[in-house]
Image 1 (cartoon, rainbow, N blue to C red):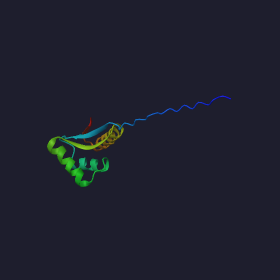
Image 2 (cartoon, helix red, strand yellow):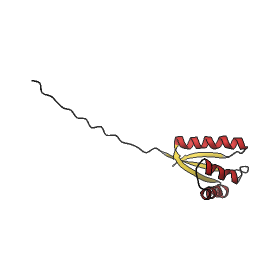
Image 3 (cartoon, rainbow, N blue to C red):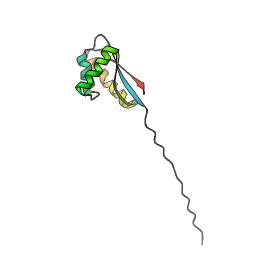
Length: 99
């Protein structure tokens, strides 16, 4: 009779959190404050109060953080804003920066 040999392997799975990116709104002389608040509320899901605070940062400091997301989500939100901005005739600029 043959002996049965049992082999056990242990695979260790290491999960890594994805890199996060800040979506930055840049000030310009043409995009209205109302449109920036609209974008922050409707695309970035901010409250009116939070959107107004971010809009004022953009206006006073030249830049504001719209949110922090994974790369794909950040790029999707930027594309949505670019489409809406173009439709409304605004040159609103957004960039991402790794956190």
